[in-house]
Image (cartoon, rainbow, N blue to C red; front, side, top):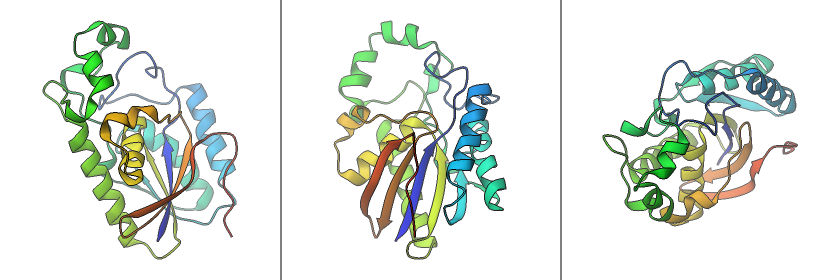
Length: 203
């Protein structure tokens, strides 16, 4: 049973303003860099066995200080990448919220596909499969850090909680937050969701 620290990347200038999606060149800002360092310090006492990251810069930059702290390398896992938002990528959130499809995204995301992009269902399936594969790769109780994106983590948590996809957005995943999930043979148990102020203790 692997133990996952599901970590959202740190703050960047597009958070809360635009739908960054898979745009290249979205880097941590000063606050995000501070958050990444805080994560490295806060997890220094934990026996991390591996660190995996989305290929996007903001996730890699969040993972790197932890990797340095623990003497590990960051392994890029393509399946952890942000949802493909298609035509919505890079658009201001204020503009998207005025559109006719926004209510559908909020009320019935399980049936929604982003224009020329990915559906929430497809994104959830790839992330759940990736975490299941990682759990099989590691030994019982190995502690593994996974740095990804808000929706990616929310979709994973909803899947392993058995929560309807239409309700996954009720979960809150803040920047640089840690969600602790034990996963074995598809069964998951959570120690914490969206923890930001302190860190779990492992023997």
